[in-house]
Image 1 (tube, rainbow, N blue to C red):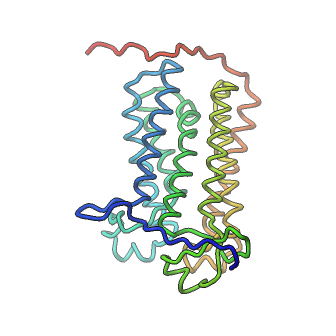
Image 2 (cartoon, rainbow, N blue to C red):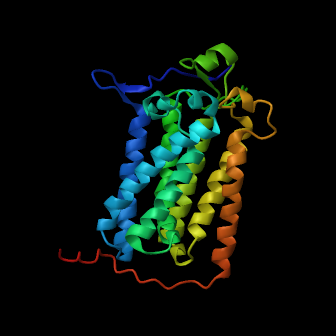
Length: 282
């Protein structure tokens, strides 16, 4: 316990008629910053500015719906199958990042078919860059909520989550791994790597490469960190690998596939006009 950190952060940023939580703020900051990052890339490549708002709506919808349904079906189907109306109670918590990823994938595919008329890989290679940043901010939101942490540790940076009922009843007074911070740091490093690949190496000229690195690194980190993270549901305790790890494996394999595929194909030579094209007159 010597040198452990007592974490007593109020998860609510503002309390009143409307309560604003730090988690929601992190979510909003991530999507706002992400919007401007994608806008800069679209302008760099001369993609229509009108695509930005449409893509934002698809991604926000896909993320929230996918994350909610992922939690329902992957973790608590027994509960929600008995009370399906509670699936709509998103404000009560219960979002799964793997479900959110699936939701975004489906949203981008539909966006590509309906709006861009381009391969979904074109959008994915640009969109996953800010998504890495959003993932880091969401994990910071989990930290503010005193949730999704790891098991006991003697390391000097162990946390005592005194506002967490689970910590108080299962771990107190032992300090535990702040796995939210571990994941946030991994995702921030990934964000920096992907920005470097796009802006310094022009790796968007190898379709699928940036997406492949995103899948491999993000879900590889998630897979490893899960070994020291607490199970989200009691039924995971007896599993060789928990649900988060099993769900990560297909994305890691897909990432390796996209990397190999991209490196075996000839590099494209894109033009970068660094301006939005004129919008057609209505």
